[in-house]
Amino acid sequence: MITLLAIHPTYQNLLLFFSGFFVVGIFIFNRKLLIRKVPFISILVITILIALYSLIMDLNFKSSLMFDFWPLRIPLFSLIIFRIYRYLFKRKYKREPQDTFWDYKESTPVADRLFNIAYGCTCSLIPVFLGVSGKF
Image (tube, rainbow, N blue to C red; front, top):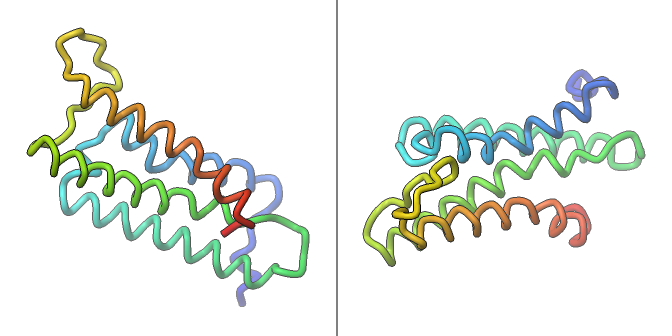
């Protein structure tokens, strides 16, 4: 039954790319979805389902060298990191961080730019941390 969930090898790289880019893409193009409650819960459910799929596939193919499914957990980690960074930002500045990814005005607060840079750098390092730590 679980083998029906296996992905054809041709589509594995596409799945990894799009799943890894899922939360970061929403952060870049429409951050309001990560901030509002109902869309956030939908995104959280999707990332949890992807992570559960990854765990099931890792347990099913543990002895096989067919494919590593641990990168499918990256969207969940990047979503958790966004919420932690957002919480810390709101606690310190008493407001939501502005979306400065596509904004190149000099009048934009530095704290908002640093929020974006910190989140972007952290999310780009998630695969490194997971890979070094034994594929989480």
